[in-house]
Image (cartoon, rainbow, N blue to C red; front, side, top):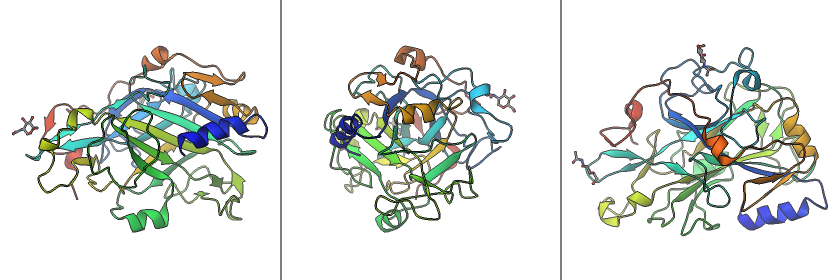
Length: 334
Ligand SMILES: *[C@@H]1O[C@H](CO)[C@@H](O)[C@H](O)[C@H]1NC(C)=O
Ligand SMILES: *[C@@H]1O[C@H](CO)[C@@H](O)[C@H](O)[C@H]1NC(C)=O
């Protein structure tokens, strides 16, 4: 969704039922865990950047691991949101083949003070049903390497080459092919229709679906809010074209070894306390674009400084800093 659409949505909120919740979630931890796709695996195959409640763990079995009662803090500004949101991590590949991790930084539209992490949205354009306890899903597939496959299977995930922090438009589904003066924004949007029954599915995707036009398909009739991540990657230290590959290709690689960008994917585990999310949706809450402010009488919000204080000690101890001879976990680049 482009900035002007968000502004329009926010404006529309006053006349029709629509929620435009937008808030910051600071970095909780960067480590090789994936309790959704690789539960119990310590470490998981590839590296993630994770935000949200500090109940994030090696395993998060919905039956025994209740996020709102397990977490003691959240890195998101709504204090009742103990969900976990995560994506893969970007690396810069130098000419000599060594790799350097790219940091996230605060979205400069309102969240400059955030210690990295990402911006999270919950968007609706009418009545929507909030997720049930235990709900989780993924979108995208790390094995995808072509535009054709990405476009056939998924929608609404892309890269924005930021000329300034305000840049919107010009998105691509592949890594930007030239240096981006203000960094790279990665946008990941989840499907908005649910089967109404299952809080998960074996592939973590089949219980949700994209709408056909504006209507949810009969197999997935329940409208859920659009969960949407915007992550600002600080590629600015790697903008010297002289350090880029001599063959003219771009130097960034996802932590799962993808140099194309098409393997873009995201993970979501719902963890709002009680009916806090449903109440915010029903109240058509929206957010100020240029400030850490949610216009929502039913939601308590903490400052960015408070959100920054919620960090989780690393479970996986491996060096992620400096120049690395390979991607964490030895993920092959292909
Ligand atoms: C993570 O799981 C381990 C093992 O079940 C447990 O000892 C630990 O307290 C958990 N940590 C958090 C933050 O939930
Ligand atoms: C590889 O390249 C990077 C970036 O130019 C440099 O900082 C690093 O020292 C190099 N490492 C080796 C082992 O040559």
